[in-house]
Amino acid sequence: MPGDNRATMNRQRIVVGLSGGVDSAVTAWLLKQQGHDVVGVFMKNWEDDDDSEYCSSNIDFVDAAAVADVIGIEIEHVNFAAEYKDRVFAEFLREYQAGRTPNPDILCNAEIKFKAFLDHAMRVGADRIATGHYARVRQNLDSGLYELLKGLDPAKDQSYFLHRLNQAQLSKTLFPVGELHKTEVRRIAADIGLPNAKKKDSTGICFIGERPFREFLNRYIAGAPGPVKDERGRVLGQHVGLSFYTIGQRQGLGIGGVREKGAQRGGGDHAPWFVARKDIEKNTLWVVQGHDHPWLQYRQLHAADASWVSGAPPAPGALAAKARYRQADAPCSLDQDAAAPAGAFSLSFPQAQWAVTPGQSAVLYDGEVCLGGGVIDTAALATA
Image (cartoon, rainbow, N blue to C red):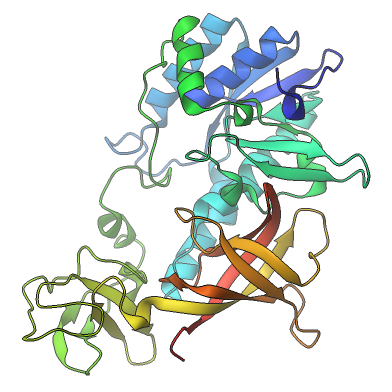
């Protein structure tokens, strides 16, 4: 088996986060096959309306327990809901109330799966933990530092969501399926008769599930309606509250019937509308027509609250970055102004980036190595 995560090691006690999905199930089986003492832990991170059709951890636990039975390992049910609400959900709401678009999965990994869960595993005698993430860990033989690498399946790589992990966390973590493509993981699951071999991959945030996002957010954040305007300042309609929209959003704007005679910048008569700006002070939502409209093209961004895998920021210079998860690595230049606050950095892109969004993470890469990143707070238009 490939070497990054599967190097020969003495028998170890490894606690695997079993989610009920196929990736963590195959993770546990691979480690058991290597001769390790494997224990499964199912993490319950959300309790509010958990019995609903959208987000039932009970079903996932039944699946995880069935997997543990087939593999022949013990499984423990651990409740991290209080930690999740304090460390992840509260921050999620604060960011949305401030008009930003956070990524709670990144915070969940840093605060729950690789902090609360890791701490629990160490307390019960684990040598390491393992999860079903598509990423890899490698120790650099020259520096001794642990590196976070992209998963080998480019369509499933999850290093973006793991970029806040530190040296202590990575030194205790294994990602066995990061060495595999998803099709191979499914094949293994079917070959060994796992009951969830064909289970659909989960989508969305765990505490929201498949339910309409606006419906969920409306329980916690009061709507404050205001005008929707185009680039000329014309009022096209009313929004239901700026918290419910994100830069680049196309669906749910309520202005689908608006048409303009003659072509506009970036679009024509029937070009779709996109959210381009949110003016918090004036409670105004600005929209533009056309995916390639100049108001959606950015050449620079500034980020704060940086976290670097090595423990220190990379040297300024040419790297690559993702300003959102579903995006190819984009060449960029890292600039760290000595006068800037600690944990802040700026990126410049030779090619404009689409819909750079405050609250999302800008994650830097040097080839296959994920260096870390920070939370986007401002961005500069390519036409500015």
